[in-house]
Length: 56
Ligand SMILES: [Zn+2]
Image (cartoon, rainbow, N blue to C red; front, side):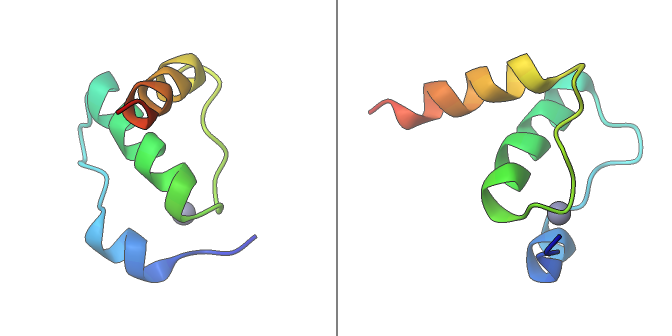
């Protein structure tokens, strides 16, 4: 497991993150770092967000 400390330093999860914020955070996180799995409860939304961003 590799932790991208620089990324984590500049991408803090808000204390009371909304579901949308968590989805956005994990979508960015999975591309930058692999210290954590995407929680199953939000995984479909994270994948959907990543899919939509890949399109031009
Ligand atoms: Zn990480």
